[in-house]
Length: 227
Image (cartoon, rainbow, N blue to C red; front, side, top):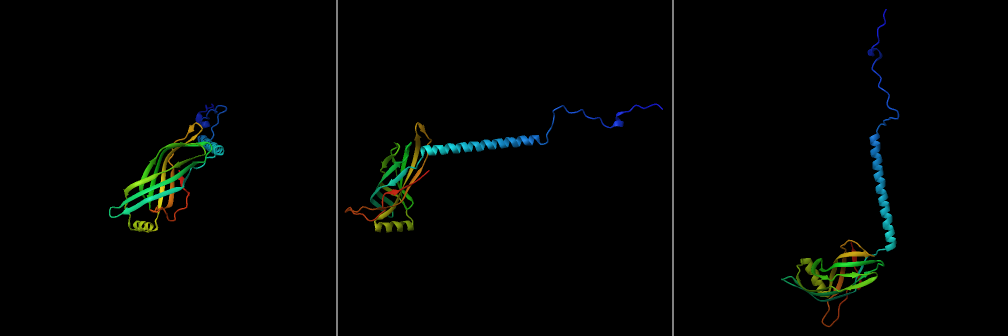
């Protein structure tokens, strides 16, 4: 019997050629690269935070920044009259406010200083003081003056409080400063900030014609300094 030639169907499908030497495809390789990149960025961010924290600590240890101090040391009230039905408040009020920069290396530019006077939560007068520069370990005295008249409308409760304080001869007045300042360290000037200074609950006696006064807040009074 003659032998029949063998065809491909007898041996099954052809065997693919071997992969080139050194070639290896790892399952999930693209996902692994993404995880590596994410881990790298997280480490970089943590390193930056740590470096900034160390720099801030070194800066604080060297400079030792301290808050500016405002105190009300004197207050004079010679007129404080509210009339009806026109609701006009007539006033004459002055303050003496020393401002202390306790820092050894930081100077302060006071680019704008606004002083506002309040009674029972209502602003009745404002004034703007001259700008100035305050050096290291320096005290500058501010003397805001409020004089004139303004429309101030009291509700029943506020009017009752005013009448009671008029009988006592002592008025609870607040002074608030709104600042625009820049801090200076050596030749470096920082960006402008807008701190707020509140001198609350100052009980000021109305001066009488014979020069005597009633009891009032014991001065000096420390004000709150807030960025």
